[in-house]
Length: 149
Image 1: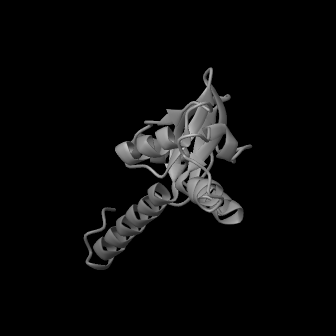
Image 2 (image 1 turned 120 degrees about the vertical axis):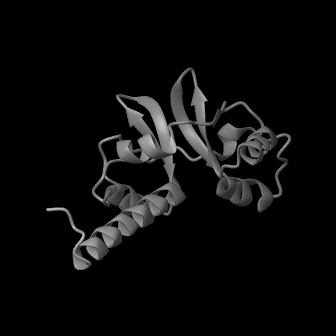
Image 3 (image 1 turned 135 degrees about the vertical axis):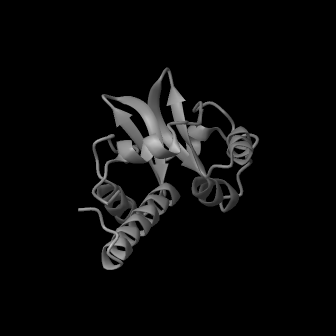
């Protein structure tokens, strides 16, 4: 494991489950789904195509702060689109760079225009921590003379 590992490695470890909502769903339905699934964002999909992403941040900024009704507002009205995406071949390092540059916390993963997963900043941080733990373990083994070879 290292930061140059690919998104595919992260997805293989964490899983490829994707939660989505239709653009015509109400914001209340989307927030309820996020709460039930324990996630901070949902992909907005229609007819198998990625239309956007809706997050808790979108809700806070585009519904709550604008005094809109979450029962009456559709997801399409507040979703972020176009979406910054990555491919399974992109590196963890590239994902971190994109998230920092665009100030986002979730990246849908597309393979030939098909959604195959999503990675969050938490997924990437956990991957990097695991990478560092593995490297430390190897170095400790080497120092203690337990390094194979």
